[in-house]
Image 1 (cartoon, chains in turn red, blue):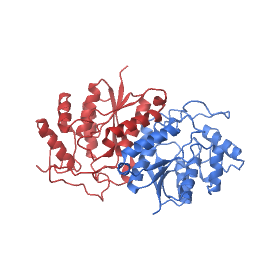
Image 2: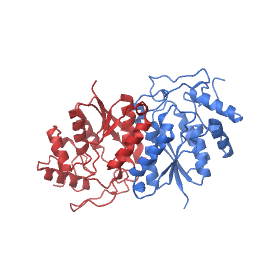
Image 3: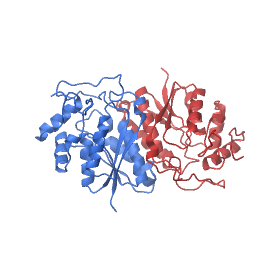
Image 4: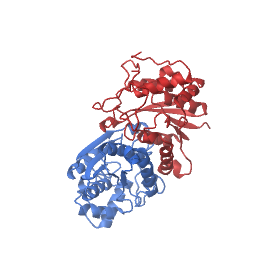
Length: 229
Length: 229
């Protein structure tokens, strides 16, 4: 029987590559995205395109009142998205951090994985570029795995739902190279924190800068449409 | 400064008692409930009444597309809620188990706790009566705590958000006795898995049986309105 995986697909470069890796590893893939009051819902269109490209069995977009909770520039209109003018990404935990986001997303993926009797959950967290986020670190993922083993019917019966983080130690350039090898069309993906209505990237935010640097370092063309360049 | 706690309030007997305990322990309480496609949304009315009775600072009802995921008789119309005709609660993991529910709820509480800079999250899980649910066991809660410490900004800075489970080792009768001492009006609470439209309990499901047994064992009157008796 083919193995099944729930893959968290945000619409960004990392999660698109993660989906490509999951499929390449032989999994039947079930994509999961969230409509959580993010400012730029256009990323859900990217998530759909990517999921379709990689022939997922199902793509669920779960609505989630996370915006009610506030606390992040990505969901709370009263906090401004920072635009870094240098190549340096600010140190510390960024204001774009969404409280407990990966925990919430992984938990919902865990619920779906249990219903599907899936073998794995794939998430495109990366500890290299986004070290400011506590929930992108390997020790966090390990702790989530331990908790998940105790939380689920499947775990109780001794079958794990493995949390797979294939990008965790990769640079953005390495991620892009792997994705291109596996057929990811990065023009379908959206990384920008503040895209315009047509989905064009601002070219100014931290996320755009990391993406641009990644394409430069990978020495491949950047297919992203920017408003600012 | 007064300590703050996020308290998960479902509308049931256990969570009402948990809220009473949190307030009695000196916390400013922030109640959190979920609209997750449960069949009996009338429990949210109970949650509101209970939260108001105990003077919470805020009560958030977070909408959550958990029904999309399926897999439980409590959210999936294709699975029937069992009615136990004996006093015995069926062994094993019941079909009323909602996949990863406590994990999802605790994760969202964690997000709100982080935004509020809260000191604790209170959840009314109970390992005695509901031992069929893997996510009600102390070892599960411990693992969630470890994960939460690694997941959050506050945790990274060395300040824990403590997961408090004051009911975990108590019998239903003990819970009821404590709640009555702390002023819980149990007629406001709803435990039934299949209430009618007015919020009357069926008197037949496992949850009704556990509640009835609790009031009998506590030797106090059961204020619940039942349709079947």
